[in-house]
Structure formats: C-alpha cells, structure tokens
Amino acid sequence: MSCPDPAPVRRPAVVTFAAAGLLLMALGALGYAVASLVNLAGTVDRFRSTVAGTADDGEIDTVVTLVRVTVVLSAVVTVLVGLLLAGLAVGLLAGRRGARVATWVVAGFGGCCGGGALALLLGQRLAPLRLADDDPTTAALLAAVPEAYPSWWIPLNAGVSVGQLVGYLVVTTLLVLPAAHTWFARRTPSTGSTDQAPGGPPAQPPRDPVPPVRMTP
Image (tube, rainbow, N blue to C red):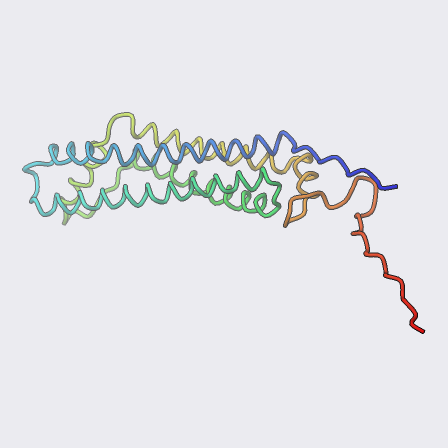
C-alpha cells in the first residue's frame, strides 16, 4: 500500500508581498529612467537659454555633454537595478533560498545608496557646491544646471529616495518573519520542492526488483 503524496506547502503571504514590493520598485525604477531621458532635451534647452552670452560656446557644450552623459549613465544603471529587482522577485516566488539572501544584500546596498542620494540632495539645497574663485565661469555654468530642471524634478528625486528606503526596509522585514523563514527552510535549492513530508523521513526512491537467477543444467 503506497502512501499518498504530501500536499504542496502554500507560499506565505509575506513572501508574496515581498516579491510584489520588489516588482513595484522595479517598475518605479523603469519609470524614473524613462522620465530622466524624456526630460533631458528640455533641460538642455533651458540651460542653453539661461547661460547664453555668459560663457563661450565651447564651455557651454562641455557642461551640456557632462549633463547628458550623467543622465544617460544614471538611466542605464537604474534600468539594470530594476531588472535585478524583478529577477529577485521571481526567485522569491519560486522559493529559492539564494534569492532571499541576495535580496537582503541588495536591500542593504540599495538602502545605503538611497540614503546617500537623499543626504546629497538635501546638502546641495542647503549648501550649494562652490568651486574655486579662479574658475567663476565654470562655477556659474554648473550652478545653472539645477535651475534648468523643472520645478517638480527635485521633489521627485527626494520622493524616489525616500520610497527606495521604505521599500527596501519593508521587503527586508517581510523576509525575516517566521513564516518566510519556515517556508524557505523547507525548499530545496535546486527544484524548490519540499525536503521531506511533514512528520516523516525523506521518501526513498523505489528499488528495481532483483531478477531471478536461472540455473542451467
């Protein structure tokens, strides 16, 4: 008489919520990257109009190139982070232990980056960057860059940084709850199935019967 297969363990709600939080943050990262690229052309036009006649065209072009490279690189990194978060979310839903550990690492690093970005943003607003007095033209051009962005851009960046901190904190907290710990502890790293049936030893694979030995006269 064979024993019935054990019922699959249902995924805890805290794991589902943690994965949903990562997916939401991934969508937010993608939206922020798109908004940065879309807003780049208008920012450059406003910057050129503001500083026209205050410096040589070569110096203005240098600052414009710096702004473009910075925005494009930031958008690329943001998209890569969004893809990473989406991959971690899929791993959590599949019950992979490595995805849980990787989420903690990414959350710690991302929280530090978000806090640093928020502190840098506040510091620039309270104490703007000042260059040496022997290069007043470059200082004036760089000071005009933040003013070229729309009025809603700085609050958006602050909101993204705060949302990043809160999101990572929530996801990390959900994954350390006992329900999540118990569920991940019951999953095998390779297949994601339960290690053993509840209350019993691991199932043994059936053995092939030994064929009878025929005696020849």
